[in-house]
Image (cartoon, rainbow, N blue to C red):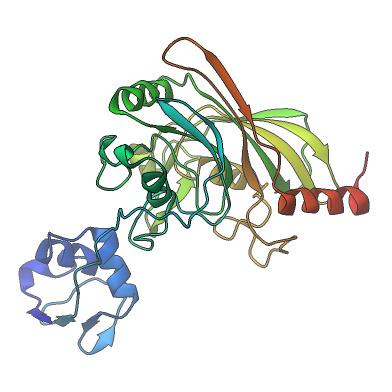
Length: 316
């Protein structure tokens, strides 16, 4: 347990920034989680991360070291392997499976399953101690196609393909509302939400200070079927920013169905209740020049939602 008394030079500083200076061994995000859990008190009371310190404040921080990430092989996690050769693996990731370990998920990830399947992959990539072989990712509740590198040469090759946008990624999604046209493009830069760094916001005003911290993002889409209250869409991801599809469709007033992070307040959850977003198609040219294309049909739980929407509210 650590105790501090705020000095005049530190007044008006945010609590999380103050702690980040005092505990440089931890990330600011981790410290914010500790604050949320009530592990930090000011004058015997819990405060938020953005609390502005006052001279004389008494801080008590009961911060423990985070558990270490486990890269132990886990054979009990099934892998739906679509294709595999000496350089790459293409899998169909199920919903609910985390790609690699983080603060909330230290084990039981796709990485643990990959190491069990192919142990040498544990030495592949820029950060093999966290995400060996992983060149792109899908959110926990998003299902669909992913390509994984089996060696460092393949990792470098795919990293360049993603960087230069030479990989074609297509998603199937269901959003709320009706679209006026059959196709569309969303080009809004994305930035971390200053009130919650785990969320992303689309910067619609170029005079917004967040523009300085934003990254360009482009999403194209095609309307497949328009229902009464929802719409099935095919999404062409031109850039691969964190939460890009979810934030972009929220920004135009069409959040994805069952999106608990970016959806409507008080939204109605359909079917299984998990976000309707599936990585359905992946195309690229392999390092030896072979063009490869993979297609993943909608999982049964999402297909069931579509059938219900078609049977009850189809306007065609």
